[in-house]
Image (tube, rainbow, N blue to C red; front, side, top):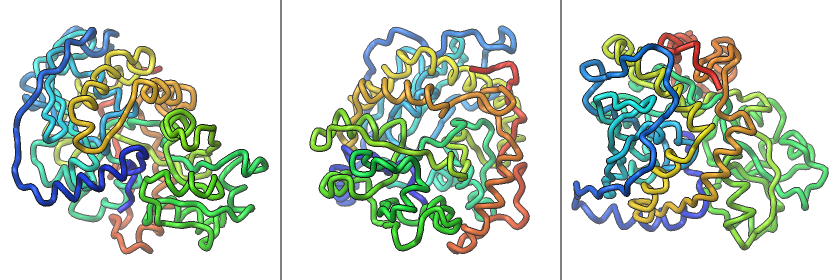
Length: 400
């Protein structure tokens, strides 16, 4: 399984220690802590679709969404929906509060569950199937392809990110002639990554990189990159690592250069909002109203991130340290600015926020299926875009 978000740097070594300690402690706590007062109640822009904003009776009383990592700007479009009076479960890394859209309380609660260490790094798809109360979760398109023929199929109902933030970075001072990932291949630069990542098999299989220059031992620890003074490249997120390395990792303290995996052919929708296939029918009325709320929240967060970031930072303050997670206001501000500037969260090819381009999904299926089969996975025979994504609930009037 590809570890997509286990790439955070400042906390990884600490998280490993916490994980070992947690394995020896079976005591569970259900205590919650009150959140500080907030200054906004979720998205402030009125959505298209009329005045009836109630989700009561259509959606579960608590809409549970499982993310793939700890709270950060990449998740801001969800935290932006959390209204005033939210609470934290610090033991489980949950945030729960009124689901507020367009400034209106929808009559249900939203609960955002952090992934990564609190979930023992389990894939979101497996968490959804192991916990019946989880309605939605972050599922990348390549992950949906990988699990399409298994016991964990999913269908994404909103694209989340138009462009995957995942990238490969290098030191521009060490490699001034390198302008992209292909140049790293030409120069024979070692590239560290999380072992098992399908995108790396794509890069090596297509000849962009060679198998003898890639190193699958990366664990998220910045120590090796710093220790070898940038002689190797490594994976990361364009909306996070460049800021961390230049500003917060003082042992490095200078810029890095990078190119997105998306821009070299692995066009993977990131953090798509997905559900079990049967829920497409069971919760059709819920999703018809909820998905446009999430679309609009994405637009609102990019343009006015204050409330979403406030909830994120309150969550990190409440339980981040318990799971070795550090995240600052500066990192959040950088994340939002980069998400917007680099078009990571943006309108789809049809000009609509959150929509899927079916031709693009079909292209990734064509590339990814042979790679996953070679890794021993069993994607659905003849898997099509309609098996793993849908635009059924997308409001085509919502755009950035």
